[in-house]
Every structure is written in C-alpha cells, then in structure tokens.
Image 1 (cartoon, rainbow, N blue to C red):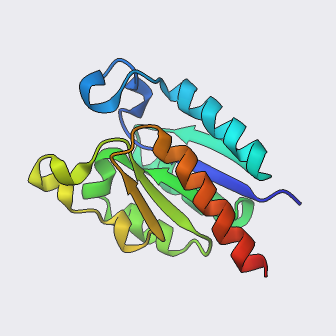
Image 2: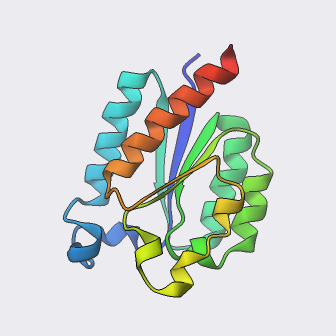
Length: 149
C-alpha cells in the first residue's frame, strides 16, 4: 500500500505568488501542489494537499490524518505562532510531522520566532522557499522507510 502524506497549508498561503513575492517568491500554491505531486510519485508516496484560512479546517485534517495518512507536512503560516489547538491535534497524530516555512521565520519579526508546532515537529525546514515542501517529502519518505525496518 502506498503511504499517504497530508500536506497542510495555513492562512494566506492561497495568495502565494501574489502576496509579498519578495518574501515568499513567485510560485503559486498550485505550483507547490504540482511539485509535491511529482516528488511524492517519485518517492512512492501518495499526497493529499490542502489549504485553509480557517484553523478548524486544519485541525480537522490533522484529525483525519490519524486514520488516513502516515505523515504530515505542514506550513501552519500564522497559526505557527498562535495555535495551541493545532499543536494539541498534532500531538494526537502518531506519524512523522515536518514543519515547513517558506521564509526564514528566525530572520523576521521577533513574534515569528516562537513556534508551537515545533514542539511536535520531527523536523523543521525554514527559509528554503517552496523547495522546502519537496525536501520535507524526501525526509518523510526516509522516516517512513526507517520505521518500516
């Protein structure tokens, strides 16, 4: 059976490519989803790609992942710094979780330096642009292969 990875995206990521391209680049979220699909296929993974501006939707997808996915790649966007509820949902998920940020959150405003999600994440990728998503999928494939041994 092909392992499934949920790739979850938080608020304002639907504006990728048009919102602050000097920070987030010119790739759209559709471009990121396409790159993830190609990478996942190459790695023998299935991928389900979601985005919402609503915290509850992200939490619902994390809950769904408990029975439908073996790993989560998540860019929680602004919820990174505010959502204990998202952290609690991720803590109930048993597979690998990789946190992704397009920009380097540690070079930005001080409030962005704190991540609740990092308390659960098995790895964090920040500042590598949208390439961080495909790198996260590579790491997930590695972690899942190790767990299968």
